[in-house]
Image 1 (tube, rainbow, N blue to C red):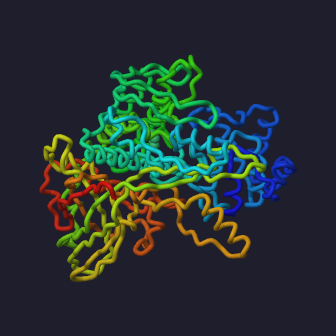
Image 2 (image 1 turned 120 degrees about the horizontal axis):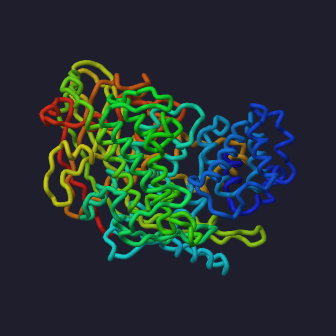
Image 3 (image 1 turned 180 degrees about the horizontal axis):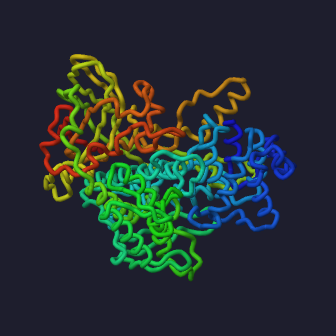
Length: 640
Ligand code: CUO
């Protein structure tokens, strides 16, 4: 299976290689229509896409793809539906090979990624990193151009990528975060794990995860800003100019460059997509609903949101997803805003420009406006959270455990170089041999760290451990109170552990964090491993590999040379918070923090962000024995 998926994704703009005989044969001689008898649901989805294909209604190949383009999305979804109708992997493989040669490549890659992520037929298959499948979306145009030249002259090349822009642009100081290939990869996978259009099996707390994953991206971006002496990111206003311009230096494989936006661009309506006035209406309806504590669904029923489950509904509404109880009335604030921001360079479509980086989850975080938009929505979510009653001391305390101290090893970061392959960016013909072409990017990393929580417990019990890192100062270096700081905290880890009566030491490593994933397995290695496994009759040993998850190396923000202060905050509460009884020593691949567990419930019963998600009017309520706060410093080491 792994070999098949690799082969389907290799050189996506070129025909399947003739040496891949099964796939090649399916692409040439198989016809999905002739095998509809074997499909689920009478193969209606297969018939539908075949009709569209034969009547030449589908988007052409060699054209950019945007998930926010309704027609293109519809086509990608038809493809996913048709894959879901296959009962066997074999059948799926043949249909996929057939469509690969005939539908738009962007739609195909998207459909294949979403299907492989969710389908039981492809369980255990590891998706190659998207930055090696469609490198254009992750690499600066300068590098892509150099790669083309290398290919033409048949000279192997390794090209050093630097971050977009110049020192004149202060925002460039944090470009290493927004342009990080791991961040972009996490973000695009998050949206594949939790698509806004998702209408298959119900995904648990999808709206709340939308809030939490993006709240955390924003908090982490802010911590990077503070590390670089920049103020916290400001929110976006529909009535005010978009403060920062952006020149993406990125190019589509087909369709030209990603458009730029000058500084202080005033919002304009986007023809055929949205009016700014409509966005304001959506916003005020959502804010009203939050103020009143209820929303009204499509049939006029009132749904109470003034409780801990409210955040999930508000997330669905703001995004909006198929779970929005009333899309007609509350609109799709977030999705529309992405389109509007992506189109400000050519709002009337006068110049036929392709969509901007904001229209693709692979590229969105490159634009500083991404974080302004998400800060704006984050503040709406905060309004809801601030309306909820603060946790009482009783809700916060846990009589069974008392944290005595936490030992934390050195927290330090550095820049390193990372190399990835650009081979798939280039057109190939089987007669011209590949030359190795790679990009080297600087990226932030940190020294592995550990923490050791010393706990005294009264009795043997399972406990929940939550760990956060919170900047203690804002950019003016004024210490702010914890009720303000709490919203800036970054989730570092959450896990379940067994406490024994008496003294306990809970040791945990940065590598074990349940919000993060290790480096993705390079495409070339996936190919090599799968080919080897097939020829030796062995099997692959990948376990729980996911694309969704914050890159582990970005677990710590950059910090400063002399050390930037943070609170290291630990909360231990009862293990009853766990949804799964077996969570101790079984963390489901340790990626549940921002990404949940595939096909299962979110493992923590408490609201995401607990106990820091609600207003803390009296800091003394937080002085319970099962909470612990300590000031630590994060050092940035240059020239490592
Ligand atoms: Cu992830 Cu706006 O939700 O990009």
